[in-house]
Picture (spheres, rainbow, N blue to C red):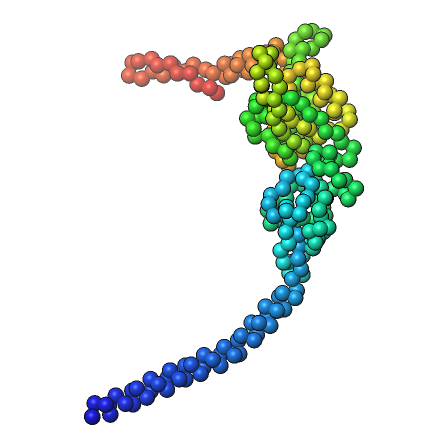
Length: 273
């Protein structure tokens, strides 16, 4: 009996502590829950639906309902030129690529009057889209993609001296599209070849067509931010070999032979000065 009298105060203290903890917990929950509910309600009221791409879309795509969806944006973070209804964008054409979950902005859409997709929708006013035939070498083993900028080189025979010459004929040209087509080889077998569609002005389109039909094309991939124009004289075999020999002779003239005498032995060493 004495033992129970000793444990009784401890048990009463535990009961009081548990009861006090439950009361405190319930009181705290009644104070916090309404505030959180109010905050969530306020955030929902300030959210605005914004149309985004459901999947990644390339430029020239004609938008369809299954390509679009809406996500909530806070009013203070709405992007300029956004749209809230997917129906308003159906049939519009993209003039710039859009990644998945990226908003479809007005700046990335062709004018409302353009209803057909493809390359024609992304050609800049005053420009023309010209396709040229190529191969993996011209396309730098597949590294040339739509949106890249290239210089166009052509190798052809100079009608004046009948010598082959390589010359840069176009610079900083936009690549609109790349693709592969199949034609019949002389043996009657299907032979794939690459097609590159470039954006040029009318004068450049004439030079490009002449170069493509009269010579062999080669593309030089440019840095995306490099807009510098470089004028070259062109290169032929004779001039290229001449410049190589001049450089070789210049290097040879700078090389000197030095004799080193050590312990009665003479050693010769060539040094480039």
